[in-house]
Each structure stands twice: as C-alpha cells, then as structure tokens.
Amino acid sequence: MTVVFTRVDDRLGEFALRPVDPDADAALLHGWVTHPKATFWLMQDADEARVAEEYRRIAAHPHHDAYLGLWRGSPAFLAERYDPAHVELVGRYDHQPGDVGMHFLCAPVDAPVHGFTRAVLGTVMAWLFDDPTTARVVVEPDVRNTAVHALNAAVGFEVVGPITKPEKDALLSVCTRAQFRVAAEPAATRVEGAPA
Image 1 (tube, rainbow, N blue to C red):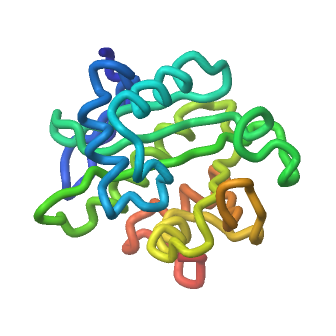
Image 2 (tube, rainbow, N blue to C red):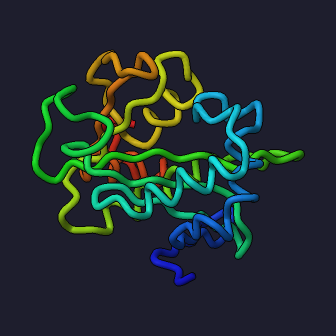
C-alpha cells in the first residue's frame, strides 16, 4: 500500500501513514484493538473476522478512513479520519466547515519509548493539517481516558465539554491549525507568555 504522509520527528525518526488493508492487516489490528491497553477502542471482545469486517466497513464509507501508522518502516499505530458532519458526532456539537474528526491508537509494546505516543499524535495532527481544507481537528475520547486528555492538551486541543454518545460519555475537544502550530513549536522558540 502507498504511503500517503511522512513526518520525521527530531528525536524518534520517521513516521508514515498508509491506508489500512482490511483483510491483510486484520490479524495485526486484532492484536492491537483487543489488547487490555486498548479498552477505550471498544473492540475488546472482537475476533479477527469482526476486526476485518469493521475496517472493510470503514474503507467503504465515504466519510471515514483508516490508516496504518509506521515508525521507521514498521507498523506501530492506527489512525482514523472522519467527517463529523456525517460520522460519530452528527447533531452532537456545533459543526463548522473544515472540521475533521480523528481517532488514534498506538500498538501495544513490551518496552515503551519515551515520547512515542506524543510523536504519533503530532504526526497524525500534522497529516490532518497537511490538507488545506482542514480548519479544526475534533476528538471525542471517553471522559475517563485521562491519559489521552493530557496528550490532546499538549498538542493544542481545547476542551469544549462533555457529550453523550450511544457507546460512551465523551469529552469533546477541538484544535485549530494555529493552536497546533503553537503547541508544536519547540519550547526554546516559544515567545515568553505565549500559550504552551
């Protein structure tokens, strides 16, 4: 499959994204989405056939895409992009033109790499904002997922507030291109008093 985006992290090297192949990637993704650390992905009880079916459904959907993330050429994370006017958040928030919804999941590892998840999220955000039509990225993680709330804040997301979805109580947050740019700047180049 063709790589659609590449970003080089100063410390961790190359990250890339390519479309998910629902059948070829099903076994790999099954191990990720059913891992205990992926509890908020809501697929804990899925078998491999169910995972393949879900990603075939996403691949066929006109407003939802899934991408396999590579780190130094090896599969390491999953990213989903969706149009919140048609998927996930329909009627649940004040949609604006240029809004893009996002989910991401890092593969489980035995030896975590410091800063890896932040680098993955930075890569996914850079990819979404690489599209000039993207004005804001919108996320709706589970209200209990405090680790991802902290990561979201670190890359520029601002909390809008809690919303109720059929499968969870979520914390709606948005990030503009400008907010991400400020958050992504190296600390040394930030203007004193500017938002961190």
